[in-house]
Length: 251
Ligand SMILES: [Zn+2]
Image (cartoon, rainbow, N blue to C red; front, side):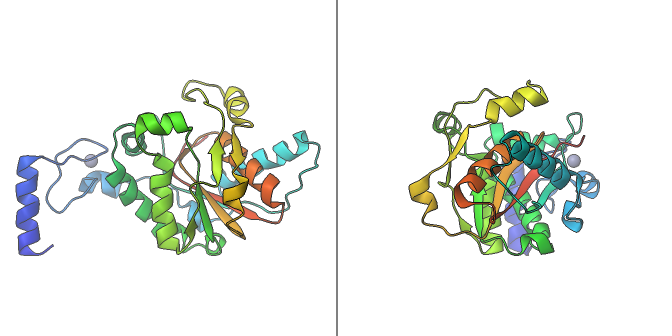
């Protein structure tokens, strides 16, 4: 930061103090979003270092089960890559990052953490061939209420960083699903099953070979799995589909 930048930043802090998103401490002029302590303790998943990580295993077992339940008529021979930036634990302050993006209109913070994710996943072999980025869509009504789709905020940064096309209109959320926070694993699965469809007219404009599905937080994987189902039903089993989120809820 140059002298003038430092001065302006100091003046801005006097007018509107910036605080750490995790612990709430007032930030110094050289800190952004996180204080030095929360930054040092940041719970990176490091999933980008290993293709068969906890998130990818959880997602791929859902995909296999989904195929068995549909009578094996929908074959999918690929192992889907999956990665998240940080461990999301209900008792830890780091959950505020995802909550502030979703409910607090902190789109700026969403972009900041999405850049941290992009810098890591695109170094990993399994994400290098991604050519189209698809955010998990919100229902039209919820998007109107919130004013933006938090998954789209993250997806835009990933698409720009990875030099991929952004296809925000490829998936459509057809049903207005209940807020998932208080539902059990099976109830969540039932809640999102069949909630997504591919907008055929839009999807034909792309001929993806590797889609990256993007959401804010990966919990049971039911949402990503439902999107995965819709995409491979449309494009066929040879399309590779990976997933990336900011937060990952550990088992
Ligand atoms: Zn802090």
